[in-house]
Length: 369
Image 1 (cartoon, one colour):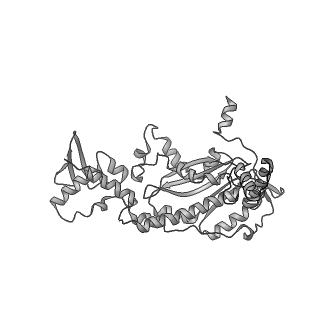
Image 2 (cartoon, rainbow, N blue to C red):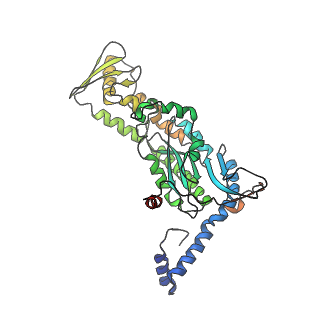
Image 3 (cartoon, rainbow, N blue to C red):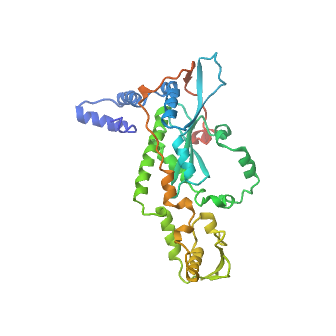
């Protein structure tokens, strides 16, 4: 019962025992037995830190190209037999290959609290996929969210360049060619919500929960891709059709080159440049999907000359079904059970991390007030 539902309430267990065995037990005894069973199922919180290196050693060869970084509290010293865990970073090799195939190079970063005896935070790195869904890239368990825990993910030159940009300019303006219409929205929090049930588990069980979720997600997306008609992703097809349906009382005029002047109701007046695939409304340039002004222009082009091409060819390749399929063509490989993990040859023993007060914790803010 606890194995299938680790969050089952104590009262439910108490009622189940009384109903099935006709035995009355106290709530304190139920609490002790549930704690013992949970420890047997998920592993002891302290013990899992001792075998964390074994788990990481198994993860790298089974998922080729995986990047793993394990840090301890103090500088490595061979004279010290026990080192305290500080943070661990994992980026599976197949995810990195899929990220490169997805043609998007803008990442979203977020964190969430760990609910176990050793407080910490789960950091996640996510990119927006071709169907405007999430594509996980990397994850880490750290002591708290600060500059030190994020520094391994930052590029110094990019940071210096970004500091020169005015803060009142949004990401759509800064990263025009990245097609990130939804990058400012909460798609990263959506991924963290999917991992919420793993945040109360011991560290290896938590990492395994994330890896198994990624393995399952890739399989589910592959099923959707196999059923999609194409040539665009389902979400992109709907957006493009919506723009096409908005072409009532719209027309475009050719100037003899690659530029067209668009006329529409309510003083909707724009210039479309087919050479640069841009419109003065900037939606086509920012989203990578032709706006209704561009679609009207393409229809006008078809009346003037032949070989204009299908409408989907004017959509950025980020949104093509083929690109989505290539990003999810890779797989997250399974690993052996915990008792069969290779043994680390390092002479030191890894122990649980020291206690850290979590930044942003509601309870700490209440104490400060």
